[in-house]
Length: 146
Image 1 (cartoon, rainbow, N blue to C red):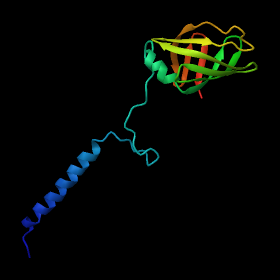
Image 2: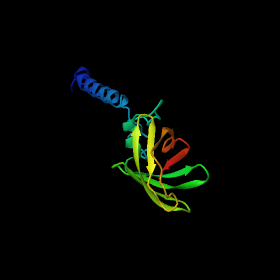
Image 3: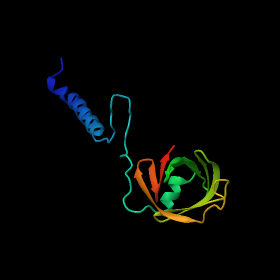
Image 4: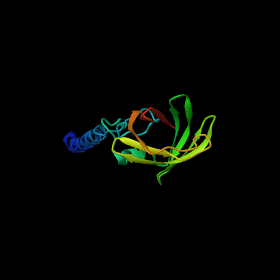
């Protein structure tokens, strides 16, 4: 029969290993919600304050489609292409195209002539703002991501 004091180093090693594993796992920034969301390590994105930079506006719009509303019950959808062109479908009127450009705090657009807009428009720049996650305004137009 061995003396009891010889078993204490083995027991102390097990306790030390358990303490170290517990310390390592408690310092994690993972969120465990029972398996439906295995790991959340980043906070949700925030809405920037102040005017958006031209690069931010370009990243938001380039290659994306939006539902829009404009004054006098004008509604439709539009897609901003990364080459600086856009296409749109205005409810009750038809299709059209134009060009767009971003500058710090502004979206600039010019509409090409169509049957319902025979002269097109010259380039007009409007303040561009994020109003909510996925929603933006440019002057009196409101864009909602599709």
